[in-house]
Figure (cartoon, rainbow, N blue to C red):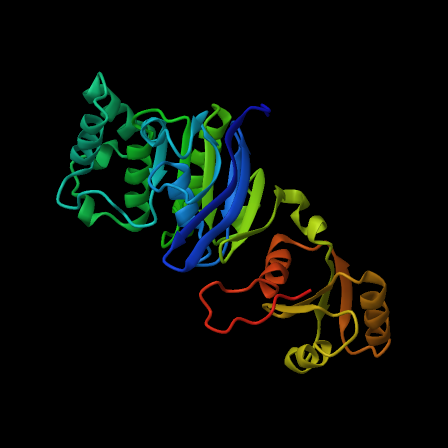
Length: 316
């Protein structure tokens, strides 16, 4: 992967009134990467994306997007970025083709008709070109929105929770397209709530309540957090879960279906507790590699809500 940075910003900050929605945020995104942008609702992801693409001006911070200054070159950035919003934002009383033609006109694209036709074919929309956008399912609206983002051949795609509310097959098809685009050198910054999507990203940044908690290659995130995780199976998991929360070395107990994942960062203390409980012979214990979900649950436990009126102290 190229070392060239498509996004390189530091200290990015945005306030609305007395609330700091994005608080001194740094991010560096290499060219051609699929960069996952994760965080709960209200964490500042959308505000950050809008600052990166020139729709909002940061109150503090500096840096570049596609080589242009994020504070002073908003128009240049907007011309070269494809931004797919959370909410479907195209005309529901126009057909798929008419919507794409409108976008092509807005960008004053040459060979407009051919570009629209190519977009229809590339995204599998040609057979539905005359269908009104308002009659489309969530998955087809998603395809239309992505096609519109790609019409002007952007170097960077900013996708704000693009697969929310669509069926699993549509999500898989969408990610196939994202990987194809990445392979051609298009850089993708995508926000998501889905862990199965996060693992498909080359890099991940996790933001909570305006602050970046961690970033790095996706495969390394759990190791960076430093969690040791045990999987527990057996009877009366609810009772065991309550007991585990009082045991030494246990910092997190998460329920995944019919199993518990028990985690902590003090490995010797946690493992001593597990060995003592294993000796009771009531449950089956197995050591496993901590995953992204365990890591993010742990990180969120120490995050403070910037909109809380009386927030709890941040965990040590």
